[in-house]
Amino acid sequence: MTLVQLRHLIAVAESGSFSRSAEALFLTQPALSRSIRALEDGLGQPLFDRIGRRNELTPFGREVLQRARQLVFDADELGASGRQMRDGEAGRLRIGLGSGPGALLMTPLLQHMATHHPKVQVEVARGQTALLVEQLRERRLDALVVDARSVEPAADLQVEAVAQLRGAFLCRPGHPLSRRRKAITFADLQAWPIASTPLSDEVARILIERYGPAAHPARCVTLRCEEIASLVDVVEHSDAVLLAIRKAAPGLVELNLSPPLDAAARFGLVVLAGRAEAPALAIVRQVMTALLHD
Image 1: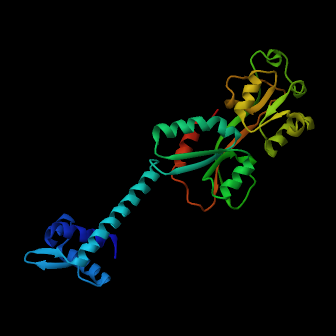
Image 2: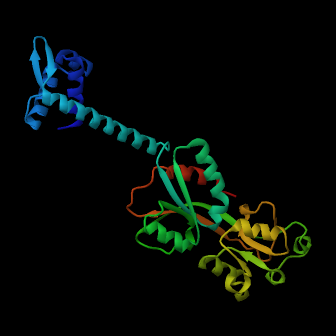
Image 3: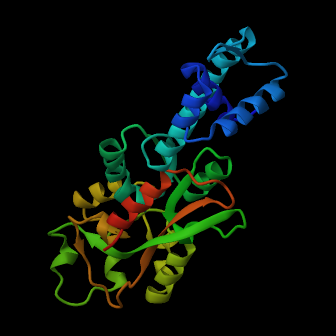
C-alpha cells in the first residue's frame, strides 16, 4: 500500500469513474485500474462495486476511504511542515551563545527572527563555552556560536569558522589614559582595573608574547564575567580598562598600546558531527555574516 494508491482510491471514490479520474490524474485508465487492483490485492478485499456505469465503494471500501483521507492529509501536513522548516517558516532553534557572540548577536538575531520568521521557536542559552558544549552533546542545544579557540578539539564536534573580529583595550571617553600623548605601555594599563570576559589559552599566549608574564589574564584581569554588556557598562562609569572585541563597545575609546595588541576573536559555529542540522541554522549563518565584521 502506497500513498499514490491511496490518492488514486480517493480520486475514483469522489468521481465514481475510472476514466474521469484517470484523466484528472494524467494517467491512462489501465494504469489507474492496475493501481486500484494492487491496493485491493494488498488489503485482501475489493474496494469498488461496478453498478451500471458508475463505480461505488464497498462497505470495506468506505472504511478504507475514511482512513486513506486521514493518511493522505497527515502526509501532506508533514511535507508542508518540512518545507516550512527548510524555508525558516516553522520549527525550533536552540542556540548557545558565548560572551562575545552573545553581546553582538543575541538582540539582532531575536529581532530578525521575530520580524522575518515569527513562527520559528527560538531558545537562546548563555554561559561558559565548556557548559554550552556539554549541553550541545546532550542535544539540549542545536548549535553554538562561540570563540572557536575556546573549544577543545574533539572528534564529535564540527567547528565552522564564520568571522574574525579585532580585539582591543578600551576605556571611557575622558579617561586619563585617553589623554596620554605618548605611547601607552602595558605597565600603564596595570595602574587601573582591567576587565574582561574569560579568555582562551590562545589569547593568553598572545598577551604574554606581547607584554610579558604580567599580562597573563590570571594575573592582570581584576574584573571578569561572561557578559560583555555588563563589563562595558562598568567601564563607561569608572576608570577600569576593558579588553574585548572592539565592535562590542563602540562608545568606548580604543587605546593604542606599544607594542600593539594585534589579536582577534575567531567566532565559529559549532555543531555535533554527523547530526542533522536544524533548518533554521541557515538563518543564523546569514545574520552572523551580516553582523560579525569589523
